Image (cartoon, rainbow, N blue to C red):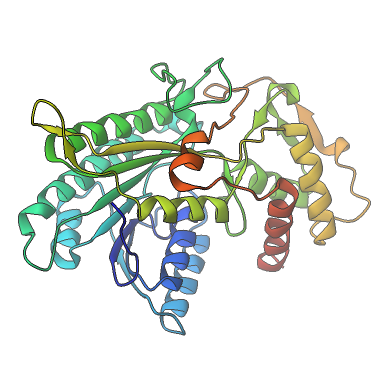
Length: 360
């Protein structure tokens, strides 16, 4: 089922977050009516979230066909979620709000259950009941898109990672909550005929990103002259995905909701889909750090004679980490005619230049 984004009401949860902000910016350019919700928690520097909101609001008040409305709220608050659905009647919902971070989940499990499980359940329930308000003009939510994660693959020995692979052995609570989201979405799609699509993101990076991510944290430490830790003694590979590529994939998925149809038993076949969004080009962490250092030097964040090797410390693997992530994007290419294409140096250069400007 093909949808239009122009003049569609798009509810973006986690709108002040890294991906939510970038997606909202793109939707404004496409003439969408964007309703953003975010609890503005202090998991990382709130000033970054405030800056993203400022940019969004400036854009919405300027030359754009779209509009932006921000609601400060938490998706784990059922009454708040229900109120937003009732007031704004979203056509498309993109659930990006979640407590992120593999290592953080080891010591702070409560916030993952609240946001990633209860919060997503509230979104599913509100989506289900949106059809109760359907009338001649409003059809209820026509597509629910939600963020999953490459973390669900755990220590999967088969590479590249395919959505057809068995992912029943998560190695972190974060991964377990994301797998739970996929299961909950599938059951709601089956029970209530809700078109839903899950997206497994692979190591998203870029300007105005998340300080808890390795590339951002490395930049902070190197700028202060501190050492950075390279886990698994440098024997890790990550499938890095530039944020603009993630947004392009999101937009293409948003407008192609899974079709509704009945099976031989006369009951709905779940209008459900699941895709990887990754570059499909794993990079060794030592190579990644080398490129990051070169781009930080080029942007003036680090002196041109900075000794990267002297500031690297090779350490064992941490709990919850995996040695390799590698996306099989065949399904995304087949159904959406899209594969992320931004190379790592181009993406890190954009990050380094933003970093130099923002942290003068």
